[in-house]
Image (cartoon, rainbow, N blue to C red; front, side, top):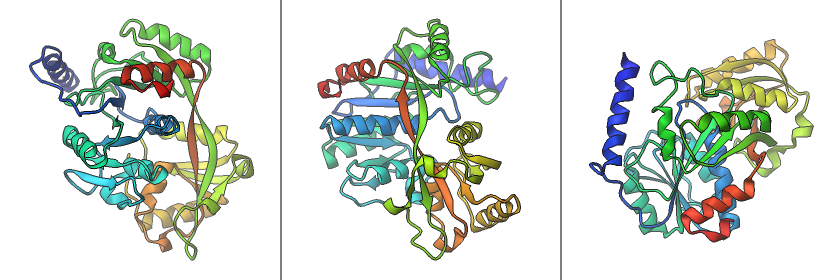
Length: 351
């Protein structure tokens, strides 16, 4: 019953936008929205990072605007000014902090009112383009391209609306999408099957992708510099076979465990925390003791979780913690995808 009411409310709101009763406002520069239609982790953050790399390589100056879910600040908040000044992770939220930490030249703004955040970004930093994070359902900001990320491991069968299921809105609303990325595809055959199933809902081009581990980073234990530095990078080959206890607070913990197995780590056990969990020193002590009992050499977590660990004092990290850096890999059509993205935004150098 609640799922039915939720679906009705979402559709009523979408209809208001479709008929012009509610108006999407222009940000003043081209906007790319990256979002999803399901709750839980689809791998949206690695997609955003892949887009930023390509945009920067094309000589385009982007800024990112996000809600900043589970951040402790409120209202408009400048996570990074694009000049190396980065605010704390608790104020920023883990995802904005991760992007800002990785791309210090990119301004990152958190604001529940996205149009206000977009306009501030344009006025303060004069970017060529805005990346709007997690905004498929946030239609108050006009966008030039809607990129939707779908987890291929979830599929389409049996999906139902929140809170009973994972759908944020009905699948037929994928008709609004301009480009669809299938994440975590096992192979091209799986991607082709999902593409065919999606034709009942959308005519948007569909591209098959997967995530690969580019390398691992090590959070240094107590007594050393607790910041992640270049010296803390470990190649994937170097850590292969390492016995680890995994932990995470993300929307899709099973996908993280698969990532570690695929990278060749020996996962003794996995501990799942609530999504966007802020860790305490007691959590880290418990995980350390659990790892010691199981003979695990190190703890292993996601990059997003590692950002949240930065909110703890150095003394809390008493056992080495690894986290993988994830890269987006196209199984097909990478040039076509960026060509379409470039044409929709008027940024020809993306092609």
